[in-house]
Image 1 (cartoon, rainbow, N blue to C red):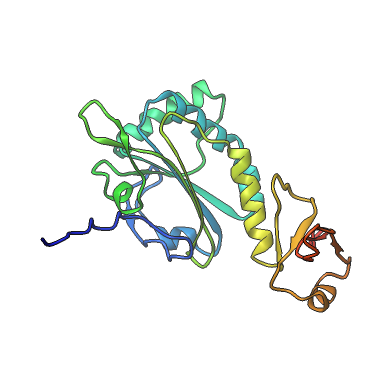
Image 2: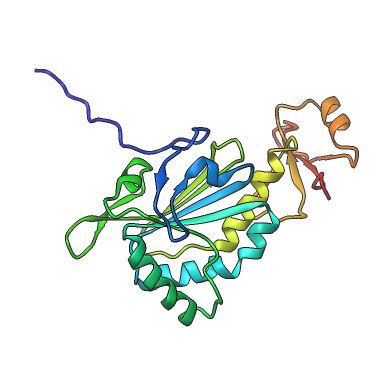
Length: 230
């Protein structure tokens, strides 16, 4: 009997160049790579307009706009409704979340073309028409247009945008220095020396020095150094 394998699910892998799509948004048509330019970018998707959790999330990102700009990072949202719907929703966001503006574009994806191609669909959540809704996806994209990080939340769970800022800090740091950031790291904290570096190489790269943490295994893999750009 012939065995048929299931086709691969659409979506993106870390390190992929993200699609250079064209879309209508609340600030007019965009071509994604041109819109990113030489900055970092975060695309975050929402199940639908006029929904409670999404409203709080967009309000939170609006309040953090200065923090993202400080990191040379643009933000852009996506919801599976049209621009007219988005524009009406923005009035509610401004009024209920006490923000003067929603200073980032919201992409219109009413036919779910981008939601499917980027792997954002949550099959367990359906809209009134019975169509699968988008999950709460976060995509962090570097200036090279490659996917650096993705996080998928179910529609029922709102995102922690302080955590999004924390991982953005880590991605930007580790893109330029031979370190990794440990659990619960925040900007200014100690970092881990990459295992690929020898002690001699680490001495050259980290003039502040590093400390090797003794382990019962006697393997010298836990090496801690102050954050190199501080």
